[in-house]
Image (cartoon, rainbow, N blue to C red; front, side):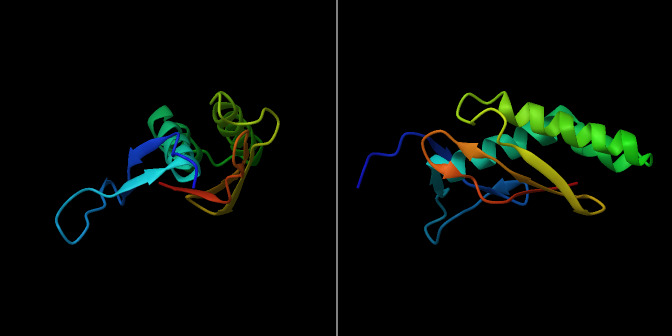
Length: 110
C-alpha cells in the first residue's frame, strides 16, 4: 500500500473524532483534502452568506464563489468543482483531485 501523502486529524461535528483509547483519529489523502476544502468554505463565510441570501441570482453567484475557492486548492483539478444546494443550508460540492480522482460529495452544512 502506498504511503499516505496528506494526513490530518479527523473532525466530526466541530470536534476531533476519538477512538476507544481516547486518541484522535487520523484521516488521510482524499478524505483529508475534502475536509480541508470544507473547512476553507466554512472559514471564508461563503456558507453563511448563502444562507443569508434570498435572491436566486445572488445565491447562484455564491455557489460559483464556492467552486472558485475550491479550485484554488493546488490539489484540485481546475474546472472540476461543482457546487449545488440540495436544500436550504446544505451545499453539495464535487471536484476532482489530481492524484485521487473524484472527491465524492463534500457536504457543507451551516
